[in-house]
Amino acid sequence: MNNAERNLDLVVKEIADEMRQRTDRGEVATYIPELANVDAKAFGIAVIDAQGNVAAGGDSDTPFSIQSISKVFTLTIALGMIGDRLWRRVGREPSGNPFNSIVQLERERGVPRNPFINAGAIAVTDVIVSGHQPREALGDILRFMQFLTNDPSIAIDEDVAASEKRTGFLNTALANYMKSFGVIESPVDYTLGVYFHHCAIAMSCRQLAMAGRYLAHGGRNPSTGLSVVSAERARRINALMLTCGHYDGSGEFAYRVGLPGKSGVGGGILVVAPGKASIAVWSPGLDKSGNSHLGRIALETLTKRMGWSIF
Ligand code: DON
Image 1 (cartoon, rainbow, N blue to C red):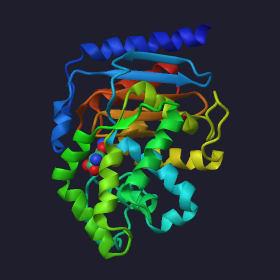
Image 2: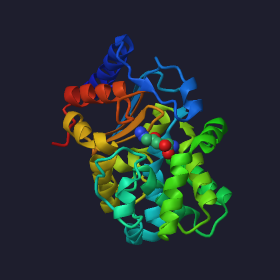
Image 3: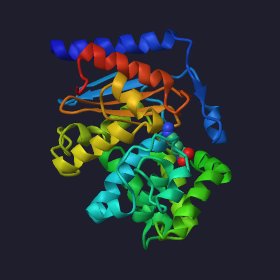
């Protein structure tokens, strides 16, 4: 280990210790009943640098429900399938509204503001489903995650998927609303079934940080040399993560952390430090925008101590 690696390792361990001692943890999501069963005190962090060194602390190997973080990967797949034609079905502007809001859809003719709010992600999932059986589309998404992490064990938590399906009335409304404008092409239950299941993929911080490496390094995994997307596409996905990745909390996240990030209601956040590292944190308690409370604080501490803000 050289000095820089030792320093990163130290900083990550310090943060895990500091977070373990904090008592302000936010509220665990309960609107998907199965998510409420998680240990509210859990905290994990994993950072993978450009050389492939992993610095990890806390519960970094415990799988959790990645939820909306999956939207980064479905966006990558859909762009690979239809390229810039995707932007006819979904916009690229921050919504300034909660992740499950329906209000803009009426005024904007069923075209969601961006691919990370629920409506936008459902429209992106519809692109992946198009003409396929839900099982095939889901298999493609899961195989993509297994390819990115080089880990065939990554799987869907079927209890979480079933729990969201039972209670996903708002997402069903969003999908039907978009369907009425022709933005959703497949049968609504096909698209929603795939959406609920890719949100229910379970991964650890270590696996998630591994999956995000292509975004930190110009579209390629620097350890294998394998190209996932072009450098331009990686830059653009990062731009969307910075502006839209935390919904109506995106401005605050950019202000405090200064890096592209995508959160999920399972309490995970995937963050990209371009050229430097891929980072994943997990703490199930959420703030009022549905983003991990301690996760954001841990990331703010990390970027300050490492000098990693892009600004
Ligand atoms: O559709 C939903 O509500 C969830 N499957 C995902 C939402 C989510 O993760 C929002 N992120 N913070």
